[in-house]
Amino acid sequence: MRIGIDYTAAARQSAGIGRYTRELLTALLKADPIAQHTLILLAGTAGLGEKWDAEAARLRALAPPGSLRLRSLPFTDDWMARIWHRLRLPLPANAITGPIGLFYAPDFLLPPLVGPVRRWVTIHDLSFMRHPETFPPQLRDYLTDAVPRSARRADHILTDSEWTRQDVVELLGIPPSKVTALHLGVSPAFTAEASPGEREALARTYDLGTAPYVLAVGTVQPRKNYRRLIEAVEQVRASSEVDLVIAGGKGWLGEPILKAARERPWVHMLGFTPDQDLPALYRQAAVLAFPSLYEGFGLPPLEAMACGTPVVASVASSVPEAVGTAGLLVDPLDTQALASTLERALTDTALRARLRAAGLARAAEFTWSRTADEWLDLLNT
Picture 1: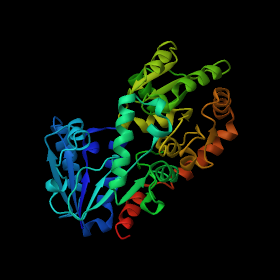
Picture 2: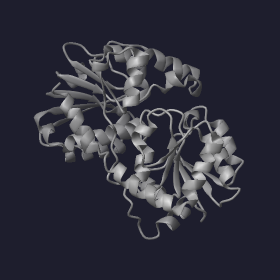
Picture 3: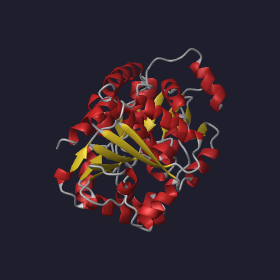
């Protein structure tokens, strides 16, 4: 089958959905059944230059002969969104890919398509509906209009978790038979094996000092619940020396979080952190904190577990689906409970050893190769 895929997020975004799409496509290209298909990747690559050239070369090196085609468009992702989803110009994606049997959109929204082509889309979460107060009004209104419209046009919808699958069924009114949950995977780069001098190198690169640190990974925005996390770590510091490190780019409505961090010198805001630095940050952290109000899945806890780091995570939405019993779950709205749970994870030696062992076993259950196999299995349904 000839399969078109919107690869724009992977080409342009380092984290989030961009990373999801790169990991999934990498695993698909390594899967044996892919030799039976041809993937046509369509990407808006305006201004990317050598970055896109390097990614295209990486993909070609992975692909079996004849299984990959690349279609580069002279647009940014913003312009592609304007053309396809805001202005709704009739520029069918399969006019660019050529004849295809299926088109897959991994970033919430299906482009225009014509003819008898199967339409798949991944909806990663419905946080803009469950927690609209955590979004700028203009973005919230756009997503509230565009995502349901895309879902109605899809022949099948993929989600990152069973929780989000149920949200799609309930909030968008999609028949359950049209929605499939495919869990994400943990990259092999996340291991518990530290390099010599790793902690010292992190201290130099990110000016972390020598104090133990609680790590949080994710974009700086209200849904990540960083204000309560800062308050919780402040309570822990009354009895334990510990810093807070937040690795994530600046998102929307993040200024109150940044202000709270600036007022506390023990809070280290790293900004966007390159993928190659994340394993070391996880390994050297005393605890990973993941107190989100809502997640479509929650990959950082599993990545931390793969690195042997104890996890304290939110009991909300899909997060327990990822963490299972291998981490400590807490009400994200209860700052006192978050503080006391972090303190246990920091100070109880036996508990830390149990969480490390359970976390390593739990993370091993989630692989991108399994995600790719399940994706390919859906082609036959």
